[in-house]
Amino acid sequence: MKGLVKLVLTLLLAGSALSAAAQLPRTRVEWGVIGGFNIPDYTTDMDLATIRNKLGWQAGIYTALKFGVIAVEPQILYVRQGLRIRPEGASELNVKSNSIDVPIPVSFRLLNPLRIYAGPVFTVMNDCKLKSGGDLLDFGRIRPSLSYTVGAGVVLLRHLMVDVRYNGQFRSKHDVVLPDGRQLDKLRTYNVAVSLGYLF
Image (tube, rainbow, N blue to C red):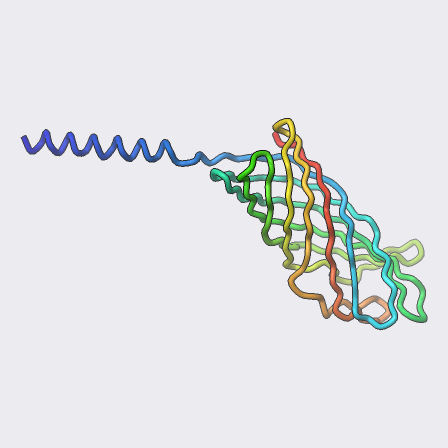
């Protein structure tokens, strides 16, 4: 009799566990490609310096691990930006910044197909060049090593993703020295990025 009671209790517990597991949201993986343009805004406290920002672009790989109405979305992006700096009494400097960024935003998907993003962005490689005549001179980093992104996106026709994000930095950079020895005091960079993606 005790063996039968144990068997019935075991079956009831197993059935309850399977029922609870069936009600949990399933993890789903998304992936695709993404690309678009960004509007940078470089500023500095350097006295009497004029900065003109140039339109940039980005492209990369998109992934997402979806847990119900929340998803973690690691990405790898190649980001190209540029600016022109004219210090007082000097000629204009044409600066190009190429970087590999790894945003890891969390998206909230309470209202399908709308997505709200927020999360950190890690700059793992930054190659800054100064155009001088026909040459490009390397001189250091301009984009921040750690920044953040917030924004919103929408998925159309199940595959086409459109999003707009604001990318900012937590603190200004104090160590940017131009090849001629001038230092950019408290260089800050922000950008608004508009991207199109295709989900496979």
